[in-house]
Length: 494
Image (tube, rainbow, N blue to C red; front, side, top):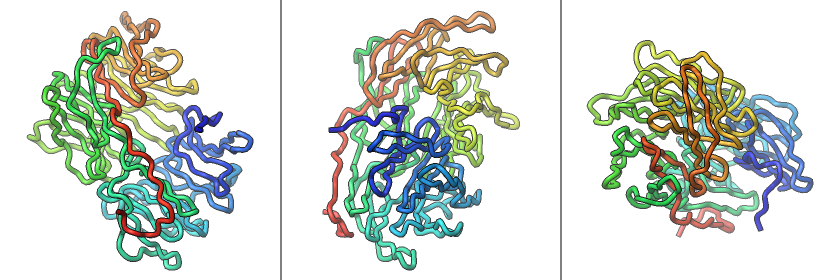
C-alpha cells in the first residue's frame, strides 16, 4: 500500500535511490534533500534552484544538476564536499543534466545540450573533467546492468551495449518498447527506471488529454475536439478572438507548437524544428505567437507570424533557460521566466521593438514565475514562493510600487478578466479561485478569494475574456500500466 513520506510534501520530485535502498534523494523548495526511510529524517544537502537529475554511488557520492545552466556538481551523501564535476563550454555546451552512475561508481553518463553538433549523451568521470560523446540525443539516458544504455529515439525506448573497458558504444540499438512516455515540461525526462538487479520498469503513455468548457460552477458546457494522445500540455492559450487554441504537443518524441480550431477541433502544426518548442503565447492582436525553442541547447524566445508570411525572429537569447509567460496588451513587451543558477526562477520583460534589452520585473532568491499582464498593462500578477509555498501577488508595471498578495493558502497560474476587475488562479486541491479587484489610481485592493469549482487533478485552465467560461484540459483516458521487464538483456521487444 502506498504511503506518503513526511517532509516531502512541497513537493518532493525527481527521486533517486541510495545504493542500499535505505535513503532517497529528491528535490524540494529549491534544494537537494535526502530522506532516510528507517527514521524519516529529512536533510538538506545543497541548494538547487532548478534541479534536473541526480544519482548516488556506493562510495557515498551524489552527482546532481542544480539547474539547467550549471555544470554537474558532486557532494557527499552527508552534505559535505560540494564541487564541480563537469565543465560547461558555452555555446558549444550550455547544459549538463540527468547524470547516471555506471557500475564502477566513478564513471557516469549524462545529457549535454548545445548546438545540434554537440548535444547528446556523454560519459564523464569523477577523476577527470574530460568527457566524450557516446551518441547524439536530446533526452537523457539510463544504464541497465550489466552493460546496456537505455535511450529514446523517435518516441521508442532503445538499448545499446556499452563496452565498460573502452567506454565506447558497440553494436546496433535494440528496441525495448515501441513507445515510452516523455515529460516535456520536465526537461524531456523519460518514464523508464532500471534497477541494479536488472529489472526495468517503464510506462508507454500518460493517457489522452481532453479539453472541455465549463461554467463558473464547473458544469461542463462544451468540448474542444476529441481526446489527444500526443501528450499536450495542460496549459493552453486562447486567441484574442476566441477562435483558436495554441498548445504544445509531442509527436514521435518531438515537442512542437500546434494550433487547434475551436469550432472544428482540428489541429495544425505551427513549428517544425527537430527540437523542443513550448510555452506559446498570443500577441494581443492575434497575429503573432511568442514561444520558447531549444534549438541552441537552451530555451530561447522567438516570435513568428501566425499566417507564415514572415520569418520568425529571436527576441531573447542567453545561457539561461527561459519560458514565455505573456504579451503586454499594447504589444510592446513579452514577459518571460528565466531559470537563473543563483536566484532560481525570475520574471523579466523584453521590448519587441528597439534595442530589445531585457529588464527584470521580479528577481529575488525565490521562485517568481507564471506572470500575467493586467488588461490595461499597468499591473503584473505572478506566483512567488517567498512564504514557503506559492502565492499570487500583483505589482505595478513598470513600477515603482510594492506588491499586493492576492491569494491565501496557496495559489498559482493567475489570469485576469478582460476588464481587470477579477483575477482567477489555481488554488490548493485544484480549486479555481476568483478574487475581485478594485483599482483607484495607483492603488490596488483585492477582495477575499472565492472558490468557483474544483478542476480535475493535473489539469490547467484558461479563462474566457468575460470570465464566464473556462477551458479545462485534463487526462480522460487511463495512462498505460507500468510494465516491468525481468532479466531483459538486449532481446528484441515482442
